Length: 402
Picture 1 (tube, rainbow, N blue to C red):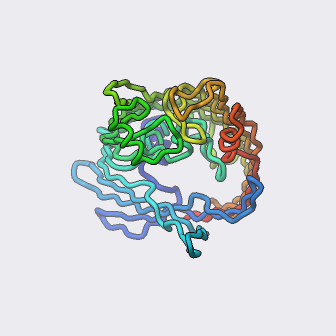
Picture 2 (cartoon, one colour):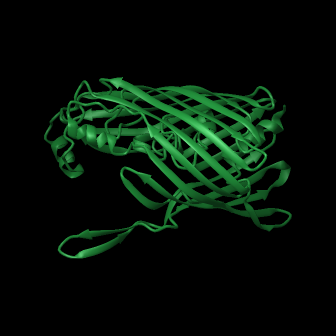
Picture 3 (cartoon, rainbow, N blue to C red):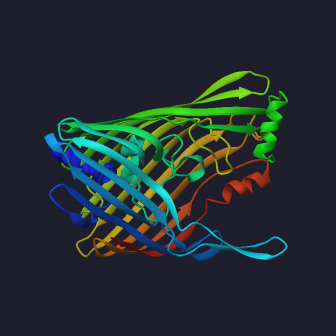
């Protein structure tokens, strides 16, 4: 175990977009590589069967050797939708509406040195992802309980725990120990009202009347950090946290602050892509960090993700994962959309999968999810809406990696 080993383990998060990236240009100073994958699947869930995109993406990685052993590098990554997504709408005439083919996933630039570490700026994986990413290897159903994909399964951009926007990050390692620290330098202002059925414009107008039923929320800088310890060639220990603040101004001028906080730890054994046994588990506690399935801020919750897999010599990989995010009763901060104080939020499910690798870059797979969530509410309409995005399912697909 050494600094090089730890750096290689982290490079899958930080610099290298994919282990099978294709180098398309290289000279004595500069290099350019293209990476990513196309993933399409047939999925049956919510009583519907359809062909869908599997988070396909394409990226370009750039590096430049500088003097005194410094290196400059950059990454640009876009999500792509190879299967198409066209909706028919009716507004006095039929119209066909298509979603964007490209959307931004990552984009950052940085400098690195073997001794002094690396510093990067842009949209990039957050320090918190170092703690929990080792359970995120299922193709179809992301964990969604490790506090990464916040605000109803978005990409964690706002609070910097996933693909964080406007992030400044520093990484370095000493022997078997590596660390990451970061901050988001951003300014976000939005308006909320204690009424679910109100437009943003009307909510802002209500605030101007001096009503405490309307609030202006400023959610600006965040900061976080993570440490990774390579205990043995197979055993890796991680820990970290991330923090931000909601500064709330009510219509009457009254102010309050809500802290967005998550902290936790993880344990990993082995390498998911190697033959043999692999195991990973992480736990977290969080407050004001995520929303439920209809957008209400969760006061406090506890999350756990786990993944256990075995890859055979015949190129077959099996895995099972168990995930839970439990906020219990009375989890919604009041007042908030007139929530029932006895609502219960527990996202809980098991995924089993079978991957067949024609080679390291071409995988055919089947994955199935069994849902055990509990979104009990006295308001049956709200309960039905909460349950809408969580269900049993099965998917068959192919992933073609560049």
